[in-house]
Every structure is written in C-alpha cells, then in structure tokens.
Image (tube, rainbow, N blue to C red; front, side, top):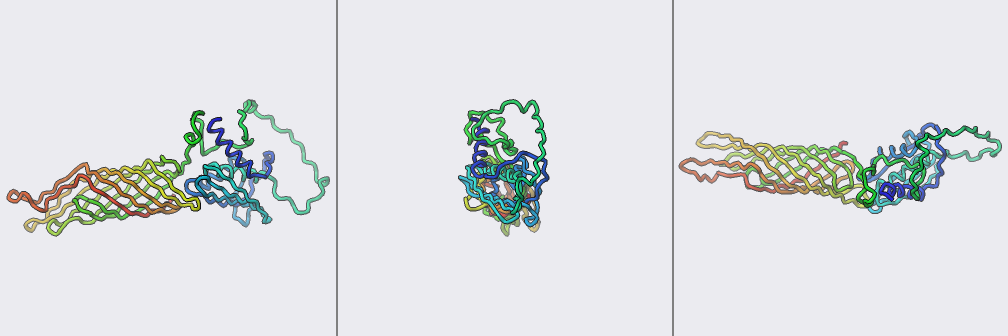
Length: 371
C-alpha cells in the first residue's frame, strides 16, 4: 500500500470510528447557515483550510452568527503525539453530539473532522417532534440517476477501509512520492506563510573591541509548518550607540542586514496552543562606521565600510499573534578597517584601533504577527 493510500485509509478509519451520521445521496440543496468555531495550534491547518476541506468533502455551508445558524460546530485540536480533536455538533434545538479523533498527525485529524462536518451537513435536519404517520407523506418522485461518464467506469484500486466519497487531499499531494518510501518520509508539508514585525535590544562588539549596546528593527516572512525545513527571511537595520572615549570623540556603526533561516525545530506542549522554536540562521551585514575625533582644536570625521557575516541561533516563544525571542551568535567582519590618530613623530598613538577579527552578538526582541 502506498503512502497516499495509507493516509486516506487513516482518514477513513477516523471518520468511520467517530461518525454515526449516515450520508445521504448528493442533492442540489441550498447551503446551510452554520456557525463554526475552530481552535488549533499554529502548526495545524488554519480555519480557512478547514472550511475548504469541508467544501471539498461535499459540505455546502454559509457561515453565520451562532444565533442564526441551524447547526454549530466546535472543533478544538490539542496535543502533540498523538493529536486529539474534539468535535461538538450542536443542533438548533439544543441537542448536541460529541466526537473525538486521534492521530499522530494534526492534518489527518482536521481532515477527518471536515469529512464528519460534511456528512452532518448532508444529513437531513432534525425532524419535528410529532411527525405525521408515514403513510400520510407523499411519495418522493423518482428521478432517473444520470449515467456516469465513461472514464468513471474504470475500476478503482481496491484499498481496505477507504470510505467512498472522500475527496483528494487539497493540502497534501503525494503524487510524486514513490511507493517504497515510509509514511514518515512521504508526508508532505502544510504551507502557511506569515509576516511579522519586531524590535530588539542588542549588545555586542561593534567597530571597536569593546561591548556596545544598540537597537534593531526587522520585517520577516516565514513559513509556518511543523517540518524541520521551515525557511524564513528577515530584513532590518541596527544602529549602535556611540562607542568611543573623550579623547577619540565618537565611534558609531549603522548597518543593514538580512537573515536567512532555513531550519527550525518546534517544541509544543499538548495542553497549549503556543510553542517554542529553535532556528539556525545565517546573516549578512553591510553599513558604515563613522569616527569623529579632534586634533589640535580641529574636528575630523572619517567613514569606513562595514561588511560582515554572522551565524546565529534563535530561540523563540510564539503564540498565534506575538512572539518573544532570544538570539546569539558570532560575527566575522569581511573588511577590517584600521584607524590611526598618531603622527610621524608619535606613530603609536594609544587612540589607534582596528576592527576585531571576530565579535559576539546577543539580542532580546519582541514581535507581532500581522498576517
């Protein structure tokens, strides 16, 4: 059995194990006004994806306020391994039904819940409390079923446990995965790109071999996925405080930078929707060093190029809307400028300095997701 069949068999098993609502033949019915409450960790499919999965499974709905809906669905997903989904289906008359789904993968649980919701929407609404005798009801008109197209008459592959009517997974495409791969390796990734803005207080070795504080601001684009390969790119700038002394005057460094972080590990607690992440990042910096000094009552200003690379490790706590992070690493200047304040009579001036060959950096920041 291929990995695609294993994934569909798991979805069918979860759906069959928790669903007691019989599916009815597809009819041209109007979309039902329903209310959906969806709560899942950031590594799971979003609410928009869940609604699309319901539609792909044949559920026709129009989202409405709770007081105007004919049915309401509440899906809460928690846990890490296994993932547990608790689906509450409440009718307009107050009756409700609770189902639980469990699977090692969050996307499988969400997809199975979407199939249950679609089947519930296809089932007839609650009947009146005192219906008339069955013989008083007019017989349903018989309508010939349309013949299927010729291509649909080809026999489908027999897979044990597959429920009829489960559509192909729009979030996961296993068509390019060979059948001899394991289910873990063949598991495709759920993509959810997000933007965030952040600011950080930083401290490290600047242009001089001495610790110096500064401030940085960033704009980041990242991929929200539970996989190890979760690329993100961040652009920003850093401005340092004056780094100098009374005899030199002032040494200031201003740089622009780009961070590329291809890998990320996620640590999530089963009882919470927040998570800790660890990223490995590479950085490129380009900017300038401004040096102001005085000699014999005259002020001198000198500018030099700052060009450096860095390797960083970033620890981040994140929720659905904000995050706090701590990062640290090593900076390697590619251009090492030397500043000499002496003269021919005094070549070894104590104010002379050179950009160090390697420096450390550390930052503490706060950010907000806006998409």
